[in-house]
Length: 132
Image (cartoon, rainbow, N blue to C red; front, side, top):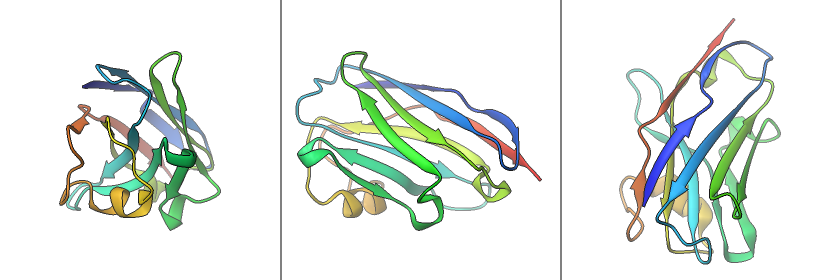
């Protein structure tokens, strides 16, 4: 599985960005995907995840109502629409994917680094900077 993120950039607070993740080598049958971020001096954290089991989604509390994760299986793409961005959203954003589905999307998103899903992969990251 290979992942390539795009769509990051510099935006003013209150603005919007849409991150894209091109996925190759993954059959969009059973799968889990997620967006993660790492701010300077902080650990990487799960922002939002989606699994093909019941199209389950999870969002970190601080992004609920502002971010939306989605997948386009026909295009092998995963997206993160980010609205009403805040300076605290500044970080490098990473896409991750695994060809395994799970009902435990919240656990997956909060533990992907510590308990990696089988055959998971990461993208190289894209910088998002939100100015105040």
